[in-house]
Length: 65
Image (cartoon, rainbow, N blue to C red; front, side, top):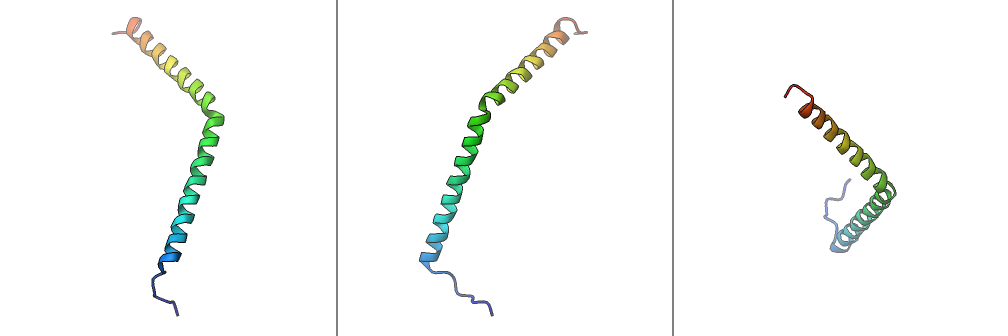
């Protein structure tokens, strides 16, 4: 049979600490991965922005207005 008593305060505190630690580790790993690809992401964003601006300029000046 399952024991329906709620966990005591020490178990709840320990689980909360483990969850916080897991969240910190996940954020640290995400930031480490982002730091490795940050330059490439900025380069891709800049190229996309330049292409969008070029398409807009072409349509504005040489398009059918």
